[in-house]
Amino acid sequence: MSDMEKVHCLIIGSGPAGYTAAIYASRANLHPILYQGLQPGGQLTITTEVENYPGYPNGVMGPQMMVDFEQQAQRMGADIRWGMITKVDFSQRPFKVEVDEEKWIEADSIIIATGASAKWLGLESESRLNGHGVSACAVCDGFFFKNQEVAIVGAGDTACEEALYLSKLCTHVHMLVRRDEMRASRVMKERVLKTANITVHWNSEPAEILGENKVESVRVRNTQTGAESIIPLKAVFIAIGHQPNSGLFKGVIDMDDQGYIITQPGSTKTNVPGVFACGDVQDKIYRQAVSAAGSGCMAALDAERYLGEMEL
Ligand code: NDP
Picture 1: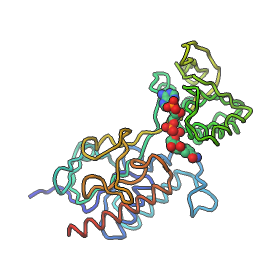
Picture 2: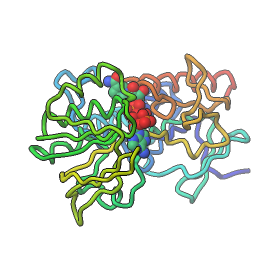
Picture 3: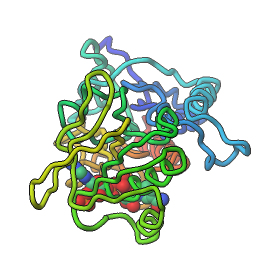
Picture 4: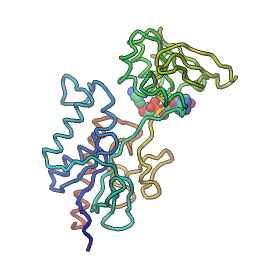
């Protein structure tokens, strides 16, 4: 007999998807346990105001919204715990997960809601100056560089959106685009190109971010010619996409070539019956708090149905 803790429904992750799954699973009497992971509340805890989440007519600060989600899940009876899932074993039932490299828990069903994280360029100077002028979130940190000159790296919709956001705060925005075209949608690209205080530097990438304790300039390399130049500025925003936090499930749960978990269309089912995925870890298209919350609800309903069918 095992004296291991056993749970009906284990939720991994604490963004809108995880907490919504916890609210629904609690109300369905599944007595879920939710492990919050490295960044309780997820990506919304590094944003400022959220204006597009329905139900908050006056907007809400991202961190506050996640406190609201957590409290609602707790009020419904979810057992919310600080801790990381460090290993999983889905080869037998009940499933087993390791918490904080210390103890194992058994679970009849699993909901993966581990989200996604911003990608970085990988420069030494980028990590050294992170938080001192280097940021992956213009909306969070742009304010600190009001009336200053800044750069943004990337050419997708996020980079365009953030460049436009920064152009309203900062004196000048240098947009570093590594090719001679932008990946972003036409409308976003056009908006950027006609904004007077945004300069697009084509075929350009940061070779190094310069500064001792804070950003002072960026050394830009031309990707075609290799020629380098220096732009003095106060901040460099990185907007080169996100990566799903799915490493824990590699080789076990089916993923696409970018690591996004594959779910069966119209459901949150993964290739392992009883393991469900919701939120940004399985969504590279919408990536919104409200769509993540919606898929968290779906995951809890799918888990409930699975447990019923399996008579667990
Ligand atoms: P994307 O993957 O679309 O774009 C990433 C950008 O970063 C590309 O321009 C890419 O260049 C560039 N890049 C990647 N790595 C590097 C590097 N090492 N150095 C320099 N540049 C690099 O990510 P987004 O976050 O912009 O968008 C993700 C998804 O979300 C997309 O589907 C997008 O349409 C969507 N979205 C939609 C919005 C909207 O509709 N309002 C807002 C925000 C996002 P390259 O093109 O050369 O590969």
